[in-house]
Structure formats: structure tokens, C-alpha cells
Length: 421
Ligand SMILES: *Cc1c(COP(=O)(O)O)cnc(C)c1O
Ligand SMILES: [Zn+2]
Figure 1 (cartoon, protein in one colour):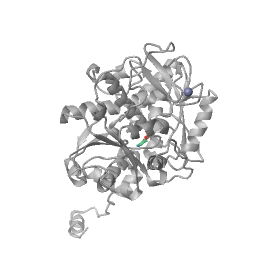
Figure 2 (spheres, rainbow, N blue to C red):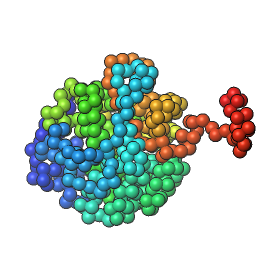
Figure 3 (cartoon, rainbow, N blue to C red):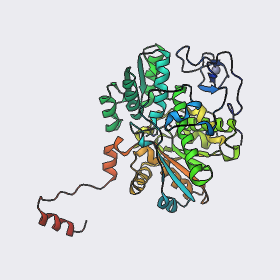
């Protein structure tokens, strides 16, 4: 296994501020982090990532939540609503059922607005404040808009969200609305919304807080740091595999970056790096296609469909960062059907863990890879569940049991209960 870029602590270029700078993943050009609004490389248009002169070590961290990891982040503090520090549930029955040695569920639905997007926003909105911008914007399948609305509002900034009309779960629109975002319903899919909001950002209309923004991914790195710390405290070792749903592949890229930085800090041996294993819905699986074909670039899917609306994405913007992450950690990618996703949502719910459909994709993917023999019975695995059940109440109600009408008297209720269900 080889781990490319940032695996060695680089020398800070002249553009660095306090040992932090932005670097292009394609041409290695470097830029000052906070001198101007910039999302991609000035020279070649490549994706940017945040680099640090001194890699932070697991032994340096103090406190709880995302800002516990301030030494691994570009700022000392942010616009915080106590994000992070989410549970890593034990699920021995599910581990037995799937047939793996250890399974833990990292439930990111337990963040303030109910998804991991909060981890990126606490950092991203703080950077926006540092840059002095006054209007924030994102395209979203729902959760990014909920998080942006909450964090932007807390920071006293105007927020603009572009959503694909009719394709966003009810809970998420309600959140964006109550937290005061201006909601633009676009007659197109998520990828069209992202094209539009990028064009607006390029014209200086708003600061872009999609995961193309490298600062958001820094916040999302803390998912990986929390998993590794907690898992080792409980099991004496790191998990050998992390299975996660993939939409724009921001988390895949962020976890890979967290691992490379820990390798650089000497906290993680190269052969201890968890295998990043991405799961997509069959109707929106360009990353799976690229992994299966050994392609360096993804092919944009113009028609995408799945019940897991949070990952209904045909053009994952972070693919250039995430494909090497999956390959270099020895992981893989797999597609699951909507039926498999709903079954997995029910399995998790039976263990008391309420997740939205996209989140259940990780567990559905694990089951499939175990059945196919790709995942072995001796593995120690963490599945990431990305969003809360209440995000998509319609999907939950459709997957769950139906209410039974009864009369409002005891006899009637007893008679009803005596009937076979
Ligand atoms: C945003 C989101 C995803 C996709 O995450 P990426 O980092 O874009 O791959 C998955 N699940 C949920 C619930 C999300 O909100
Ligand atoms: Zn470049």
C-alpha cells in the first residue's frame, strides 16, 4: 500500500499562514488560505486541499466534539453548535447476523441538525467569517442545506440554498426553512443545482459551502479521528475497514486525508489504515463504476434515481480525492438496490438505530460484500450512518408498520388485539 500526497510533512511554502496553506492536488501549486475566496486551483482548476506544516497527533487532542481536533484544523475555533462526539454504537446481534467479528455503527445522525454536514459547516462558516463574506450558498440533496441554514444563521449571515424540486426529504426542507435560508427550488437534479451555485459563486454572489470547498472536508476529517480513537480505546486496535455511503465522496476524501495525516504524525502504521469501502445506490453509482473499471476519472451519470435521496448524485465532485483513497487503502466500492437499502434501514431500526435511507446504504453494502466473500468473517468494521431517521419521515413510514385504527373503548381495543395481526 502507498499513500500519496500529504503522507510526508511538506515544507510550508511562502503562502502559508500560521503553518496552514492550500495546495492543488493536481499541480501542487500553493495558495494562502485566507487571503481571497478560492475553491479550486488558480493555475489548473484542480481540487484544493488544506495542508499543515506540522501534522497533529492523536495524543495532542483535548476536549470533546469537532473542536477537540483544533490542532488538525485550519482555525482554532468556529461557529459551533456542539457538533461531533457522536455515538459509536455496539451492535453484536447485527455483527452475528452479517457474520463479522466486530461491528460498530458511527451514527452521524446524532449531530445538531441530524447529519455529519454539521462537522463541515462549523469549520466552513468560520472560514467564511474569516474571509469577510456576507452571503453563503450551497446546492443540496437536503442535509447540507439544513446545516448551512443553521450555522449561517448562528453566524448572522444570509444563506441561500438550491434544492432539486420534489427530490428533497421533508425534514430537511423544514430545517432549512425554519433556520431562515432562502430556498430556491430548481427544476433539475442535484448536479444541475451544483452547476448553478458554482456559477453564482464564481460571479461573487455568494460563498460556496458545498464539499468542493476544501475547508468543509477538514471538519469532516474528525469523523475518522473520533472513530479511530474510540475504537482503539474499546478494542485495543483500529478497525480494519470503514464502510460509508457515497454521494459527492466528500467523506471518503476526508477520511482518507485524516488517515494520511495520522500516518505522517506517526500515529498510524500504513498497514493499519482502515480499508475505505464506499457504497452507492444502484441508480446513482458512478464511483462504483470507476472502481470496477479501474478508471482514473468518473463518468458523469445524467439520469440518477434512488429512494436514498441524499446520495442521488451523478457527478461526485470529490472523486479525484476519493478514488485514490479507496484504492490506496485497499478498499472497494459496491452498489446496492433500493430494496436492500430499505431492508438495512429496518435492520438498524431493530437495533434501535434510526437512520435515513442513504445512511442505511452502508450497512446494506457491508451485508452484500460479506455475502460475496469480499469482506471476511474475521474483520473489525465500522459502518457510518450519515443522517437521522426523522430527516425523511415519509421513507421511514413507508418502511415501517402501518398504524391500526381502533375504537376508543377498552373492549374494542382488546377485541382488536385478539385478532391476528
Ligand atoms: C451528504 C450525505 C451523504 C453523502 O456524503 P458525501 O460526503 O457527499 O459522499 C450521505 N448520506 C447523507 C445522509 C448525507 O447527508
Ligand atoms: Zn493546480
